[in-house]
Image 1 (tube, rainbow, N blue to C red):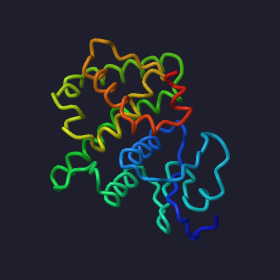
Image 2: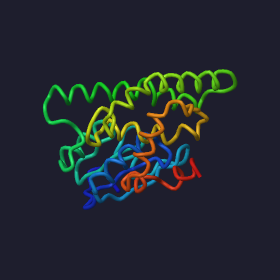
Image 3: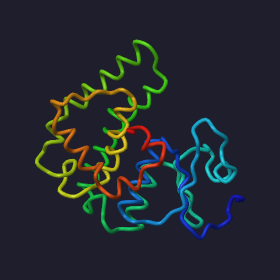
Length: 209
C-alpha cells in the first residue's frame, strides 16, 4: 500500500511476541473493536506497507483510515477515546494524570527490565531476573488492595499494561514465589477473561504451553 492510501478497515501491525503490541490487542479485545491484525515477525522483513507508514518500521502501528499511529500509549488512548465504552482511562484530568503516571512506572520499572532480559547473558541475565522478581514481590500488597483490578474496581489501561507483562514472566524465567499470592490471584483473574484469551497470538499461547 502506498503512503497516503486509505484502508476501509482498521489495521494493527503487531509483533506476535511484542509486549506493547499485546497491550493494543488487549485493548481492542476488551472494547470488541474489529481490526485486521498484520503480524510483524521480530527480526524478519518489514512489511512494505509498514515501511511506508511508520518511519521507524516497528510494531505496534495502528492504521485507522487516513490516521497512522505508532506509539503504544498514544494508540491505546486513541482507541479509548474513539471507542469510549467501556472506558479504560478515567474521565477527570487528575485521575487520568495519575493513571498515566502509574502506566509510566509499570513500563520503566517492570516492562523495560523484562525486555532487557532478551539481551542479557550469564550472570547479568540471572541478576536481572532476580531484580525484576523482587521488584514485583515488593509491590504484592498493591495488587491486593481489595479491588478486583489494579487500584481500580473496573478494568483499566493499567491492567492492559500489566497483563501482557505478567503473562511473559514464566517464559523469561522470572520466578514470582507463591508467597506473592496477591500477584498470582490478580494475574489469574486477568488471564481468565475472555478478552485476554482473544488477545493472545499463537506465539504468546506457546509461552505458557
